[in-house]
Image (tube, rainbow, N blue to C red; front, side, top):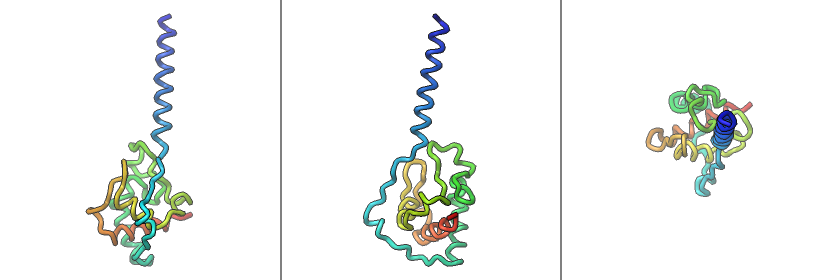
Length: 134
């Protein structure tokens, strides 16, 4: 009888753990306010802005998102949600304005860069992240 209780308790813990892990890995939809969705990237995507964006990205983003945007940075393993793969359509099909908003204001484990990186720098990072497209 004691063994049956132990097995039942272990099974319960496993089910709770698996359920929690599965739910933690799913990112909730990230709504961008209408006033941001209509913004246009004011920074021309040229070699200079992409290089400036790369410097800022490597300093601020690569630790979670990875050097090539695959979501495989050294800090990614410690996050509850996958930071995303910037090379895939799910990311690349979003507008520059979507990426600007998400970077500027953050949410959850994604820190906000408002007050840390100037708007022009955020737009430059967006230009750089576009280079991850496969």
